[in-house]
Image (cartoon, rainbow, N blue to C red; front, top):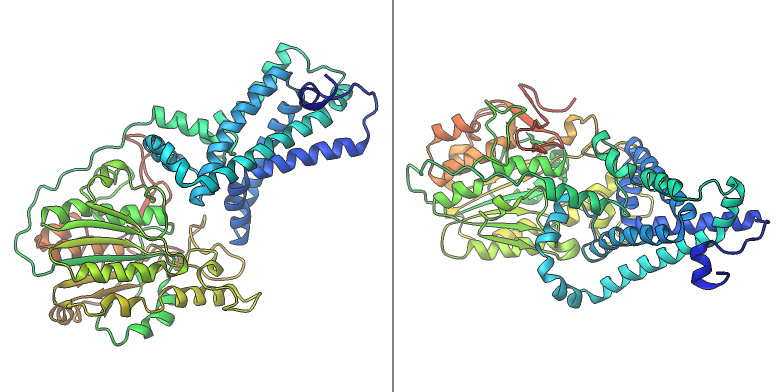
Length: 536
């Protein structure tokens, strides 16, 4: 085999001379192929981390990719033809699934989303018709990557064999190369190394799904409301990455004419989105939470609302694919209506219109609205040209908040009878806005990453009651028991099983790390608590 694809698979010509340009070209072809199949993962785990000044994690991620790339590079150059074809097939399957998902959804694939893909496999035909263009683009990128790898093999196989004296020929060498190739798949997860590259991660996700313990069922609510309530609509507005400082400077002046209670700076229950949202939905007993607490098992806000006669609804303005923030199947089944809203930079305004319509409808309803907010990178949340190029991080953040919430609250309350409505506005976590640092979800969180606003829009009579609220720090752990009281549950039950209601300071600060739920049933979680506001 001397020409064409057959020649490329067998290694090209047998010339004894291999100019440097040929070696460099082959290496660059491989680098291009590897970057193409890992484009989204590299962007999220290296470029975005570096852009957020998280150089340590960005460097570790880059080293992880480099190690995996080196092993794949050796395999495609040295493996015999049949093993090479098998290697390319396995790479193509995993990279293809990653690429198709990323091209359609615009996000990285992880274990949770892989499980969702598996449950939606029956819709594959319909999805192929609906998303023909992004599907074709993803497959085109994959094909180019495979061609580049074949080109790299063609250019380098003979020079490398000459350099090594053909010592890597034979079955034993092939077996050793394959063993080295799969090492990251087995060692990276237990060693805490990340991320697994696109050419292999789907197999780890599949193995984890097959062997994982099923999510436990949520505990049932065993109490009933002690009294009727006049509150028909309860809404939690959970913004994204809006700090207390940012709210206080930019949003607060815009709602001066809308009567509300401002509880001041409150502490989120996590400095990352997932632990904060899981804790909010699950409710946290701040008196007894420990490393063995499993928030997947607690009665959720959905069950309490349903028991009190409220229909339940979740609006997610951040994703168009599967639910995020560890919204697992047993919990998802408790939500009466789950709605994705995608309207670009004006998504939050679209959600305000939706909620406005809901509040004018009949019946009792509890809604958890996850706003699009201003997640990094901030320049993605306002129109191009709104700020000069090179504007500071603080200026970009302020502009993002201002644009995100422009007209939001006016639209939300337009024509609404507030006498039967209770709305709480907060954010999932704060932001530490300073050039050269990670704004949130850092390895050593500071107070600003937990610092969020907490606002209540209540019927005018209740506003008077809450206006005499005692001094002291508030926590988002109080949102759950306060809402139970509004639903008609006994205040004593709510405070004993969760936290103080918002007329009082928090009984105890509690916050969660990335490991907010156990990996295996009976495992431990990352949780801390104390008397002081979280963060150093």
